[in-house]
Length: 81
Image (cartoon, rainbow, N blue to C red; front, side, top):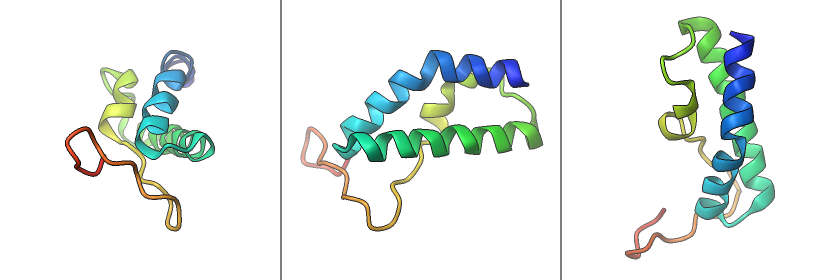
């Protein structure tokens, strides 16, 4: 399992952080949420086993911004991102 976590981190970290920066507009918050997502994935993978596509973690379990964090920027069509 450790290898799967390390591979997902190495392959996906940049994309996860970039996606979250786009959603939140906040670099620090994005990195914090990405760290939370990887920690949650590790907990879930220990319990349920490594998923068939571990790199999907950013798409399946998007972390939620912490309470008191800035609101996400609006989407392209005026919707909350």
